[in-house]
Image (tube, rainbow, N blue to C red; front, side, top):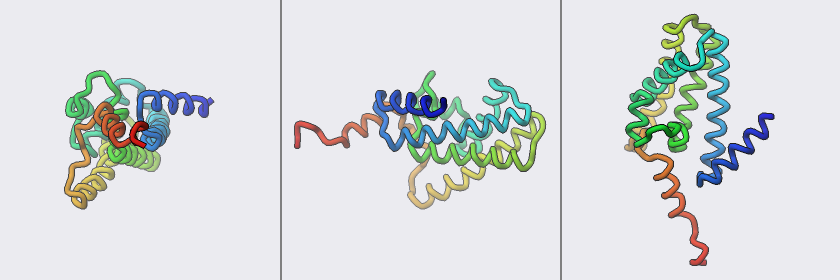
Length: 164
């Protein structure tokens, strides 16, 4: 039951200290990712190595970093990259993945090379948004902040029960 899975995920993330807003965003990103992997499956891509190659293409295109470099930048080892993204990073990653899925549905690529080209195009759509946001804010969207840092920041901003 998908609803039970979402409830379980919500409780797990809450226990870990994530905000409800971030959790809702993360759950939506899981849905978008599932739509993308369903599309890849439809195109004959194999779970595992081929999904990893295509994910890396998407990430390089929108974030200008490979998944490995992005994780290193955030100080991650085995942790999930998406679980350590800010809201904005998650949104742009979702845009990249959703764009890739839509382009794939229209172009119907066959083989890994054609799917890589589609992944790059989907990632590039999100990169354009990222560049515009950075131009407007004067700050990089790609940040070294990870879950530990994000949750520590959130806890500081929570009202202290002793200081009513």
